[in-house]
Image (cartoon, rainbow, N blue to C red; front, side):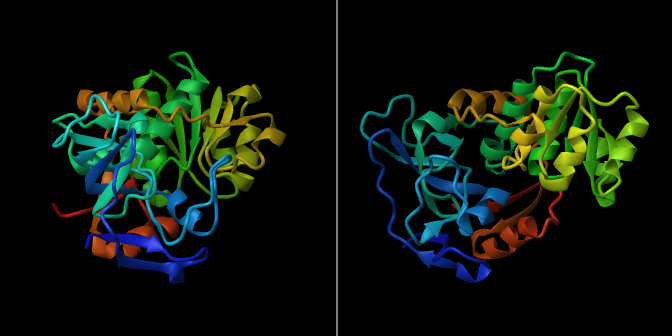
Length: 306
């Protein structure tokens, strides 16, 4: 039977297990995909603790980890057009992706370009698409200065690259150990820590034109003081407090069209998903811990054998 990495109840890492599950059956408007790679994101372990997006139903347990995959279409559900068995695709699975098989809804599934690997494609539907949506939401003109907090993580490295491709000047806040990574992407690096705002002011004495926050909490509060126009303050990390600061959450489009756009950026060389480490499915626990403990540089991806 196919394997999948799941959490059996809400809680900590002790709830996780690699299990055998029946092969899923695609319903109307869905694809059954043989997974070749699955991206690892902070939202994965947050869901294990009970986190739900607004309007999202609580998942039945055991629940498969993962929110972005790339693979090969094995079956197509009723009413599906534009996809066929054997197509190489990537997208957001219905109910998890750390598995040998996953179900994808066609509205958030795109064809994988031949020049993009499964591993890189699996890093796009959450991290790169979130980055893309936020940069578009800000709508900054070329030459504007964007501050990115959490610039060394999976979403952060995509934000920096997409912003640079738009002609923006970028200041990236990340740990000292990620200085070389942030600067290699074309951003000015400011070390994270309680005094990071002083480092930003040294580079931008009059403040920045916009903030894309990926950390939340006190980092978001400090970053808010660096931008005069709070409509240009967005966050994917502090949705609980951003309204009080005059900003807003990143608005996700969650469409196949966005997936096509981020894939095009990869093909054009404007975006490198920066997958820095991969793990096989039977080491999914270690992959998840690497992200959960905040040690990841760039993206972590689980690779699934054909």
